[in-house]
Length: 194
Length: 206
Image (cartoon, rainbow over all chains, first blue to last red; front, top):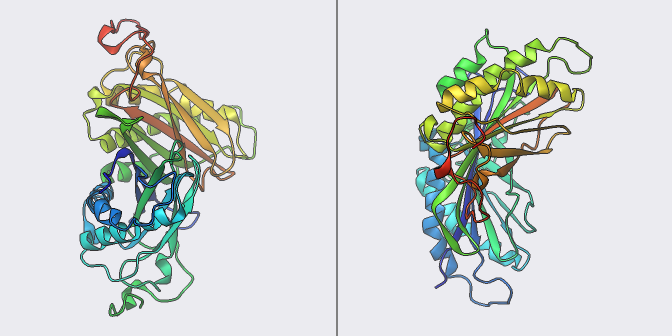
């Protein structure tokens, strides 16, 4: 089993007070936890890669915990989430897909069994590549006020033989959400969608 | 965090803050060599309204006062994000990016006259010049915040820089103001020069 070899971590937290409209009494917080790891499969085609998902689980959980701590420490304050990966140029897009299970399950566990699918995105890219990580409500994907995204990236990562892994969370709707649709207060919470 | 935030938005404060972003970066290895303890650096950035956007204003006092206010707020945020007492910080730096309707001089007014004093107050000391950079740019422009040892500018292991970027700022009428603080130098320093153990700390240089 390949080791998870961690080079670097980055935590980013934004507090948004307004965006030209009335300042909110509770600023929205949006955060990202990033980790840069060695890609154990870079440089060659490897058929069996699935077991690395298991190896990544402790890292996923640690990142989710760090992120909740950076957002104030209360998992119940988290309302939106997303995940993503940037694979260095000596790897394949499929290597980024290894993050779906460990990244998603870590957040769901920590956030008390969140029901909605964790939206995600991934790409192959050079150091400094930016990734727009999608965000949706943790219990109902169709909550329109919580459709959001967070741009992440690290100037010197991922190097060719690395993978940059990302988890993102938000503490509320877009700061001036007003385009209708399903509201967080209307969630039925049965299917993870509505 | 929330206390500082409330303070910053009180009516007597001058900075009109749209958002604050805090970045914490931790390096655990380089070229497969462990960095132990990991090097850590934080940057806190505020996106503020530029009160002088779109016009030439001779007296920049208002921006100087905003600089003083942000010097305290952002240094507190950066130190809190590192989770260290202020007096154990090792290096620092500052930078500003002015949106397209502002002047480079607006960045200078924020950064140079008054911002440093509260930074040094939060960090306990800081005999060295706070290295700085500034630019005018569009939303999403990167800021390379220079870093230098806070008590002796010549400490070579602590010459560094931290890149940050906020994708939606500065808008044309905004300014991004950033302060970076570290608890360490570069990950595996080995180009000689003055070391932190040799600091005399008298003149801010050595």
